[in-house]
Length: 435
Image 1 (spheres, rainbow, N blue to C red):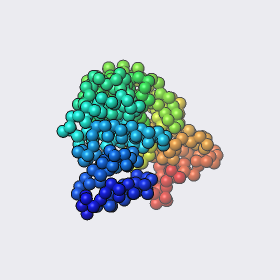
Image 2 (image 1 turned 60 degrees about the vertical axis):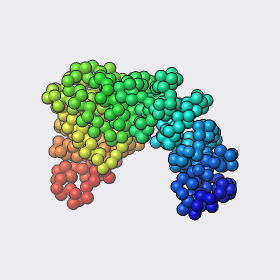
Image 3 (image 1 turned 135 degrees about the vertical axis):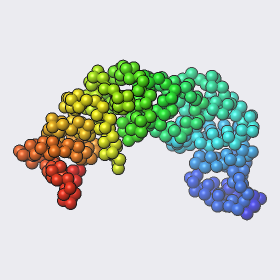
Image 4 (image 1 turned 180 degrees about the vertical axis):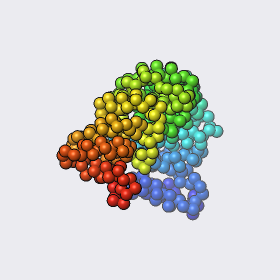
């Protein structure tokens, strides 16, 4: 099929027949199959320019349509941006851009600027009108224009850098649009740290964000950044091995910075434990430096142990915590035991760092007395890991708490007791402490 055999009228018929963009675009692709590459894009842009077909409903396909840069100009794309704003507003949420895009900046926009790099008037036109769009579309367009050199970074409105930083920090998909940010290197790192130190940012999405700033900020600034790393995901330990070496020569300053962090806020579903990641990095740095961690941080350690409640689980859950146990052992056992015993909540996931007799007794008693109605999220896997960490001392402690009554955990605790006394035979009896 040639381009001449497909007309705009053919596309209009399909557009009127199918209200959703996916179906309409699929039929149009079928119709133009065999035609020269770019045929569908050229015809749709021509139809759009003549007001015959709207493109907003094809928001999922615009990244392909803009590949034919000669088919459109600045006014056409700006009009499309205005229509996408209305399209999103009609539906009550953003459909034109996804979590993988810079907020307010659909993927097609960045691709269009790349396709039109030989036409400076395209970027200049968009740069002359970006402030006419509502947020976040205005900021998204301005950031991309600045990144591509069509706007000087200094001309961006006040506060835009902070807004981009907040969006970047709290978005776990932000690594996908990092290359759209007009700020780079140390400047961007300083903007991010300032945002983290404000009340605008509640958490940092992933350890990928830490990597963006790690080489450009001081160890104390890095502590404030790590203090807001979200505990809900299992990405924390890889960054520990990258951060800890930077702390080795600055242990005292790191200690001071950790002491200035906000107190932990225990919550079974959404705990805030600002000192957790910084402490783990600090303890690992102490191991690397062959230094004993400061006793001044023991209170922060107690708060951290009491509030620590990860919301994830998976195949590497046990290995993750075994590695945590190894790092926490940087703290002398008597101090670590005291921290585990004095924590307000039973820190069963971390007792493997110091599974002493007293710790095992406290964990066994706490588990046996726990109210079935108020068990934390992922309790079964947490209990399993705690019971497996205690060895003979845990077996003895379980024997003591199982004597009197029949508590709701008696069956799994009894099974765990059998495993601890006879770890070889237990699997043959089908032991599973998570039952």
